[in-house]
Length: 307
Image 1 (cartoon, rainbow, N blue to C red):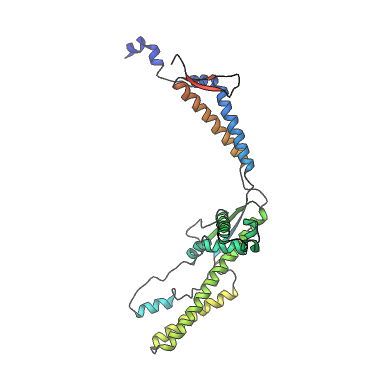
Image 2 (cartoon, rainbow, N blue to C red):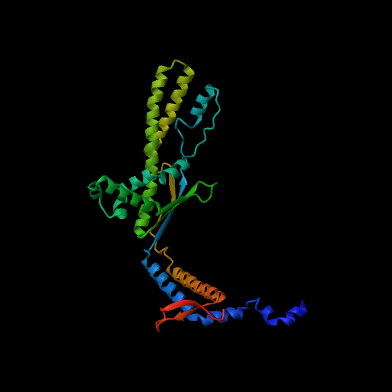
């Protein structure tokens, strides 16, 4: 093997490309690499400038402790199932319902109409009502899509009842204002839905209690009515029905985005790397750029005669 390498020293060396070879190739086509770097630099600079400023406000809320008087939870339902000889799991999470509600199209449409219509659409409610059905629906879908991309409501620790609501929009005061409104509207929506359900349940249970002659069922129905009544009373005296604000949102003083310097740096780096890779591929396959006119941009890719 040693003798074969001594007989063909040039062939053995051609099997390896050193760092020096790469530097020589890159230096030979340095203008092409510079062209890609400068092009990507100006493009990333234009892109970063065209992006609007983003301001972020965050509030911390905790799940409010409340008595669940609904007919589908609590001891009353367990007792009713026990009479029927059925064992059921009555544990339910109001937080899951809250998370589904705040991300629902119905909640967002109501929020847009009642709170942030002008911020998202640039028009008043009277102007929206003056549109035809198709135009109004397009405006609302666009506004709901913008709202959906403007906030996040997450629970970082699944074992802790703490949630973080983050709103990121193009105005600092709007960011703080929407943050407060989202929590207020979420609590109000959930409270109204549960109160409405409780009132309907009370009316239904009262009829059943009057109609039944079984004292055990009558007693059970009245206990369920009492639980639903507590739900209605609790909703009337507490505004923070599902979520209690622990750390309210503040007007942000520092812009959160876009990171324009990073965009320009990464864009220039990608352009430089792309130019370097193109130069190496071109050299590997034996191509070169031949200038057709004195202009730098009038180039044609041709194969070298020695390749």
